[in-house]
Image (cartoon, rainbow, N blue to C red; front, top):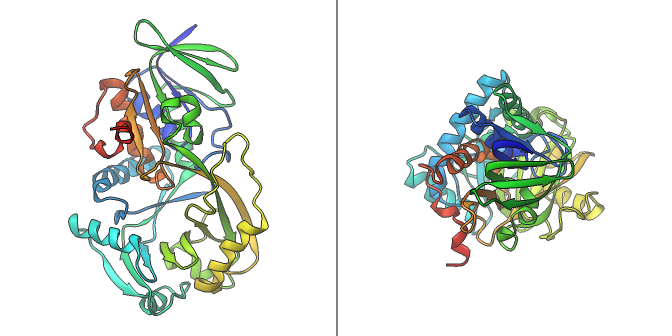
Length: 377
């Protein structure tokens, strides 16, 4: 049986970063991924994921975001390619908006620069938008997106250069604690031992670590790309990323980048809880109609022919905050899960945190909001 200092199950956004940060510390690390690296089976594909500082979810995320930005720029230098694209970000909506209220609380608490804009003011500044007069939006200049699949490639490539071992198409079947305080992991191909186990399995986290199964629930999500009638309005330099709450629901979107088309999704989509192994992965007419209806109303210059539709998954916790913790009965096992549709931007710093938990059982980063015990206390 081959021995490692640490085994990481799941080499997507979080797992690839964890493998890198462990390898950077000189650990003998094995990353196990049941699909390709990268792949389109989980939560990290579709070219881009939003990043922003005006964090409506909770002001306590902001210090982690500062570190995430720093680490993404470090990874850019290692990879020799651009991984973070700054476009600015507008967030708000029509009527009562948690996006707006929470974002305002965060920017004021952390003294972040921002501007408040009406719908017509947004439309004048970025004509790809056609928001109603009553819309209220907060603009932050630092927002943008990270290139999710390229970030995974960057972390894995850097980890391999540091001596890490990463296996694609090798599924972890089971793991057992050992008398010496380590673990043994059995896969569909081999068996390995390690001092520490890191579970970053995304929508499969509950299958790998049953302790999180009831608190990290997978949900089917659909992304769409539409051909703009005026492509120049939807270039990154002319179109900030957005989050909007309107009567149709809560939506988020991006300029054209990497693959053609204006990109958007509806947060929580149709709230379909799924088993990641049996989920319907083929987008359907109802999925497309929900995205098109929103686009036609608020971004009519982007509502041309459909270019692509892709399914992915959110893994939601009851309070939509992350789970980042060690398991109480098995302190040699740490889990990062339940990122509830807003986690990828943190992958760089979550990898650092998971390395801290493996090495020290704790981290200097404030992860009090993410403790697993909050659901049972």
